[in-house]
Length: 212
Image (cartoon, rainbow, N blue to C red):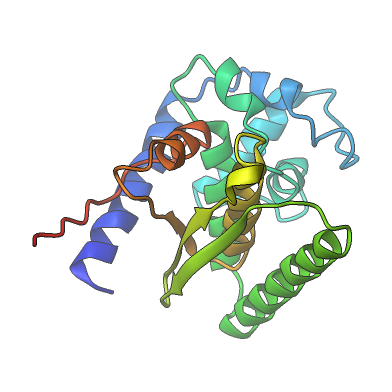
């Protein structure tokens, strides 16, 4: 792992530590989540669901718990972000929970999970293509042993409809599901792309300067 990658991983660990310290288990994030119900999660005691998520972040937790199920079925809607009063990004909390769960698996199982996630994503892309939906497409993707990087380009006629945000969220979910860190790249002059990053709750991790 390079120094740059190590610094980024350390920043993620710091954010996780902040979540563990700041989260009051108010469970508003569970209450507004649009995924919990359709996923069949019993939300009668939402605070315990959050506690189960925090247990996983601490390196403990039960694999088959409701908290784990909640993390695994998160669609990245972001509704949870606006209701949290603890200075916590619940969507990031669940993403890191999935990473922690992935770290528990053997290397062979990690590879199988990554291949399955990529296959699932590919199937989704094919279905959407057959339906001829004008989705934004993700390009310029790069990948290392620890992270995957991508930028997104939306055709002019389809901008302003939320397609880019959906595509990036789906891509990031698949990358996180494979145990990698999803890194989103944008040109500083592309205000729409920067706005998309802010909308998804992404954090700035680096700046690339070009001199001519």
